[in-house]
Image (cartoon, rainbow, N blue to C red; front, side):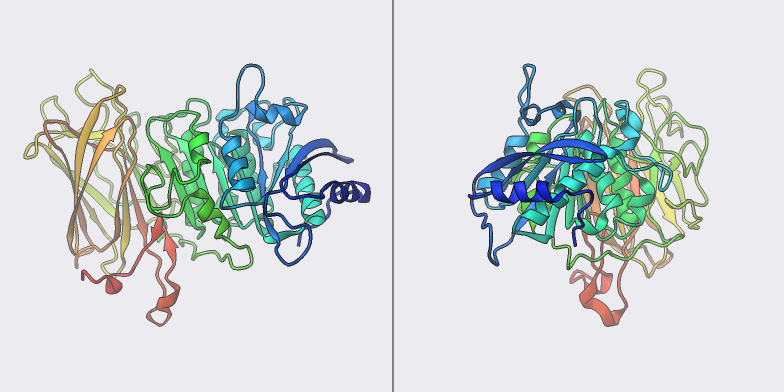
Length: 503
């Protein structure tokens, strides 16, 4: 249940008396020993102030650009307008997915997250599970939410939280501190506490968003939290958008723009953000099976700028997505997972790489001309190739292989890359790499009887073949007696090899 934290009876009565009609909004001020906070509550067209039809609730934590001393500043000021808030308001007030929308105002120069006090937006993800107290402004926002919930006819099992930028940090933080309150969350362009992502957030579905080339808030903050949440058994979706900086929030909040089957592109047929969010119910949310040490996800980063292998503490930035192991000029005999635990999995590479005499370097390539932070194979359809043999896998285990074909290249530069993965079966995926184009995925892929997979990367049409990161995630499955409870790991539902009709 939602608790009254510092709520005054006067505030609750004033709010309940002010709400008389659906389709209205109410501006109020919350006062407590922590300070005061102004906020606005939108009641949708279908809101019923009493009766059995209880309305969902969305808490919106605004960005730094929207903060100030009045609600009006959430909508823009000083010559700018807010293009994303209207998408959220229109859908929750008049659209298919209506909800009570709660918008607290942080106050001028205030933050939601303690780690970003002083506008330290470059912090990204961090590890600080117990030392940092909650930001008083975030606690006030929680109190405002409790006030509205207590005074309104709402469904407390369908309370959601979202926000961009500073609000993205706040969204990760509020779910980590109050996971029992929220049925789902949608943080955009923020970062959060990795320890909490791996532990208490597991039962809260999260759809996160970030522009891959964000110069203000590192995209690795969202990537790290996404992987930490998955590692903790969480149900995750990520929209990691190629060639986009610290913007694009309007599209994220636009109904139908991104979908669960194409979270990084348009034209999908899955659930959009609102369909996905409103399908979640806190009373039925359950965490998946956490990935145990030794069976945890392995993320291998390919590129220059480092001379050591097995760098399990390394988090890449810029063009890289996330890296816990770094492949350089030598092979790796024992990959470590995201818990820094030994896996016994090895990776060896063959093939000529680069244009400077076919060297075996996986660092900056093309001689000293272009310091590109990715491995690449220069070639035609039958030209040079990179071949990576991944060994030490469990031949009875299915794996999900995610590949990031990053091109840190000038705007408009395209490169069609081909990935051939061979194990128990063979499968080919192509991707047109354009300015940090993101993943291709091999779902529920099986090693051969020797516990090996072989990945061959090549360029097509005389272009480079790009490989920035390789993500290996064991597919967590039930015992044969529990087939109905297949666990979701990675970007979507995986299936065990013996459930696939193709095998």
